[in-house]
Length: 80
Image (cartoon, rainbow, N blue to C red):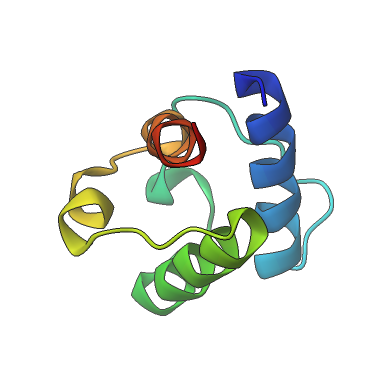
């Protein structure tokens, strides 16, 4: 799976979690860029990403992810 493929699927998860089909994430997108992205939605987002890609993040990985690009990089590492 390419980085672009992962990115498209991640974008779809963001749209579902935040119930907003107009969301388009970029590498630099972070919690400050999406109004409803609070700590509770962050948990929902992580769980939804794990389900989408059939992976389980380590807590340390979740803490290190500062933006969507870093999340995609971790996903790529996990599914490789």
